[in-house]
Image (cartoon, rainbow, N blue to C red; front, side):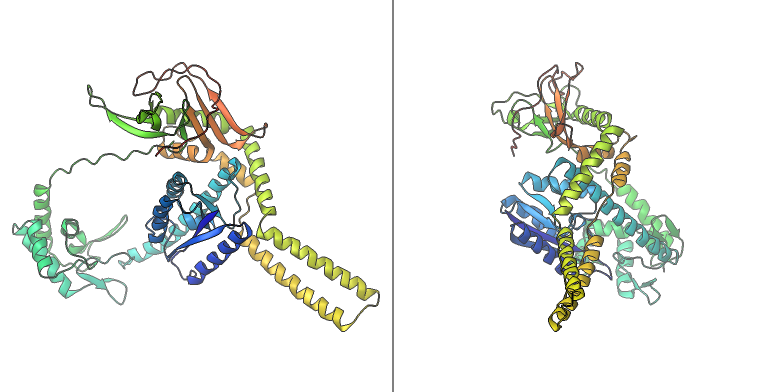
Length: 507
């Protein structure tokens, strides 16, 4: 199997280039142990995993379309993303291109319980990231209360003083005054932009002026001395560049000249993307939208990719909100019950122990056992009177080897996450009592528990991410005489056997 490595370290005093070098070394060792051929490496230095604006990360996602590699190896899952939403989105993109994400340290298999364990570890990483962010924000709030710079881009006309407070930059402040005066005197935004750019003036970021950057300046209350950071507002917290009368006149003119912006098309999340399949042909069902010719109402639904292209399938679309709500409500009813949670917890811990047996940690523990046996044998020999310079040297060598192994094991135990059964049960119980109509709750339920959904004309089947008593992924059959019958919304459902067709994907 061909794979690439993705490594990243976050900004901070404890994070250095060596952080990436260590990640790369362990990823290469993992690949060698598992006979994986590394064909490329992507690295982002001093960039947080909470944002998806990482150049090499995005390049890797784009390169996956070439299908030259089948896996992305990361040191730990939080190197891929510390945000479960971003993680789900980009894993789905990789999956569409036939690529999966492998953690070198966390040893998570592709089994159904592995998906739940992975979701739990990602949730722990997101908590760590949010907690770290909270601590950072606490420090930033203290700076804000002192009207100090809290980071980010410095507004045009200011610079940072020795006490970390804003001070006026005379040259840039003159440009800010000119912008306000020109607009107040009736010049258009386009005319002001053209004049400034022709003279070589630049924004605080060093870019040419544009409509957005100019409007940000004209609306920025900092120029009349107002310091703002989140909910902290301090009058006269910043040296003013513009007098309040000029600022007020400009705001009135902006309100008059403001044009009603075109309504952007709402972005719709199709929560069952990559998991919803046509029961007739096995092809994936993709999110679509359409507008009623009579009522002008917009509909959102899933449609069979083969039926859409008229390739021999006549499966009718199913309404988005109906199928997503049904899958979530049935999952909550069937999975989030005590006996199933207990079963899943047992399976997750069993999987973790199995994977641990194949880990670096287990290999070190076995090596330590061997060294201890050798030491015990030497001590027995010494007790029997066999004591030479060679036995003494060998004993000292083994004692040193034992200490080294114990240190490496201690390190591995720190960096290799291990969850307890109680933690798994507690984590799964957090999903109880959620709002079924809440899109974020729906997303979590589907991402964590649902493996695949097949839609027939008269019933649906849901396969979950856990193994039941039969030793196979749990699959349930749902029949409902009240399924929608509108051609756009779906078709009537009655009864049929569980899906037997192979999953297929059409682009």
